[in-house]
Amino acid sequence: MTLLTTSVALNGILSWQVWQLKNNLPAPAPVNRLRAENKLPIGASVPALEAVDLNKEPVTLEFNGSGVPSVLYVFSPKCRWCDLNLENVKALSRMTDGKYRFIGLSLLDDKLPEYKSQHNIEFPVYAGLSRETRVAYGLGNTPQTIVVSPDGRVLKNWPGAYSKEVAQQVEEFFNVRLPGLDPAGGKVNDSRP
Image (tube, rainbow, N blue to C red; front, side):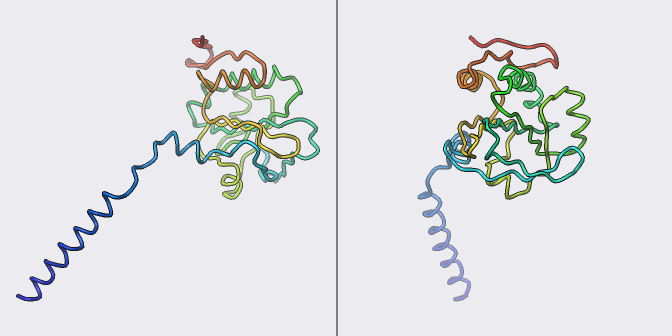
């Protein structure tokens, strides 16, 4: 009986301590704040990219010596927002006409050559990014657009599709007017002010 009483008393004390700890923890950060904190910061130096091309051949994408900034468009062929944003990215690539080097980085390589061909993507696309590369670049959610200077520093980093605020920031940075998101796979929606 004494053992039972001691056990109940200890469980009560431990429950009280757990309750105190739980109630003294800070509130969890909002999801948007977490995304912003995990985002690759402006000015950060990034390493060369190790990837594979559409023929599954390994490539190293260097920034030093490229002469122009690089635009890394991170996407996934199975991402609905990437599909909605694709006309914006293709238009951006055409409108900047050689002032930037566009590079597509797919987080999935399943049927990537077919995807590139079907969607008429004119810039090179790579996949097979290592876990280390994904961590170094803060990759995970798609789409994401990162602008890297010729000396390997991050100039801009936009998570998400080009809608509303992101579209305005992208347009101002590149001094272009984007077509808007493509909600119906061919019909451009320009509902921005």
